Image 1: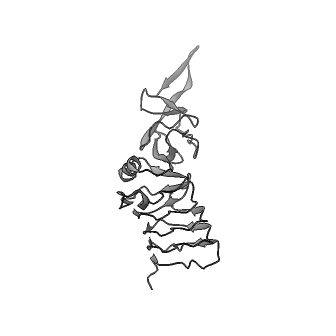
Image 2: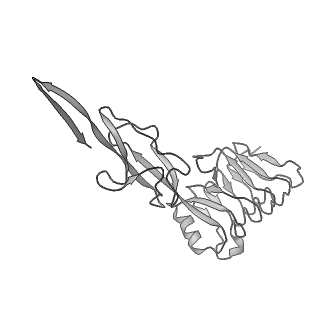
Image 3: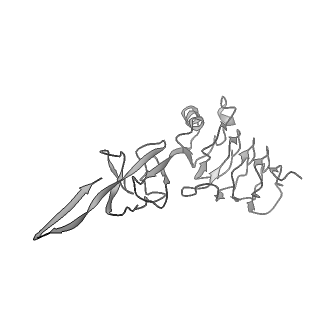
Length: 239
């Protein structure tokens, strides 16, 4: 039995919630077609999504996911999301995979788009040219928000995580928080857009780019008392 492809889930199933097995890598064409009962899908991995896979699941509102970085929401899709995959659902606030290479392969017809009649917010990675191209040509009514992966360069220090995800034109702290790094003998002076110069960034700063970028830690050298005879010297500096 092939457990990597979910071929069909009966539209007559009365369950309102369904958990997709972690072994699944592909949701087949029309797998959940016109299931009016299902409201919630739970997933723990990303997978390719076929033509009309969730088409006309008119009460489907939520995808709960632990796949990938979930500070914004779970990843939907792996490499492929085919046309009409989520048409006529009530999905809102989902996040598309950074690795999508096929999205809406019949884009010449707006009615074939995956979310053509949607009204929700779709988060996507601004570095993914396939999605950017789709957005520039779509006529759908969705709100599209770009995610940037923000690399955190501790600049000689240590930091609890090496990146966060931030949404363009929302604050860096909207969906995650900027960690405070440490460095022996120095006091953290903040995150900056450049190694030297640049602009200081906090959780309250609007995300400056829709594509991936790096923030750099800046340090203030701790003052050190040095006694020589009757004199006390103070040593300080920036880095």
